Image 1 (cartoon, rainbow, N blue to C red):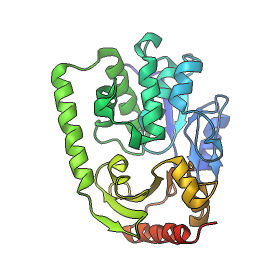
Image 2 (image 1 turned 120 degrees about the vertical axis):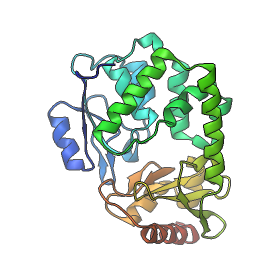
Image 3 (image 1 turned 45 degrees about the vertical axis):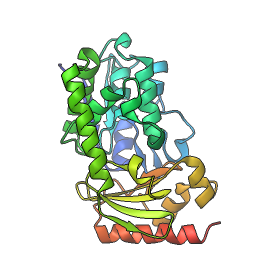
Image 4 (image 1 turned 180 degrees about the vertical axis):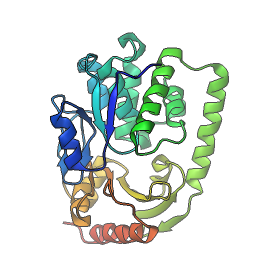
Length: 285
């Protein structure tokens, strides 16, 4: 697939995202601890924008092809299905009828509340797993291009029965690895996990609040089992209150978020973050 006409700029800095946006690049999930950088299509749903629907769902349903003539984007973070599908829809990189509404809905639901979405049981679940199993995706523009190309091929070509078998086996291995990651308990409601794979759907079965440290990215993600649980434990702002306490660059949505985009953290710093979360759990508003 030729993506030569597509421009994707990557940044870890809010000011740089703002510069690209001023040049006509549409920000896709450009959320930073101090706020979100938005373009005309408002393609974010974190922090103060968390009241919005997910970006892929809105891009597919409301804005398909609007950036087809000038597909220019600025992005941050690791390329996930929500951001990647939004880029594909806005740029019309595959025909609209090749993006099933049920697939866009599944991407949205999995992004917002992974614990209740069991992909092995969902229609299009194996397709989404196929994308999530793409290896060597990092926080850079080449990874976004690879992810976009992979999802385009997935939507255009589908997957074979043989591929489905491999996808299911790989997902079963992921579940096993997630359940066997090193775990530290900080009281009954909080665990710190040194995650070698993505595993919040499994870790939430151990505690309602999870601090995950990624050695691969030297980053921390903090999540609550649901938005209602986050508000029950931390007040109406949920984890947004926690991120404000942790300092500059921390941010996300009420139920999930993480460390600054432009900073690499150690496991000891992850433990410090977990202690802050624990303190706020034992001293609620």
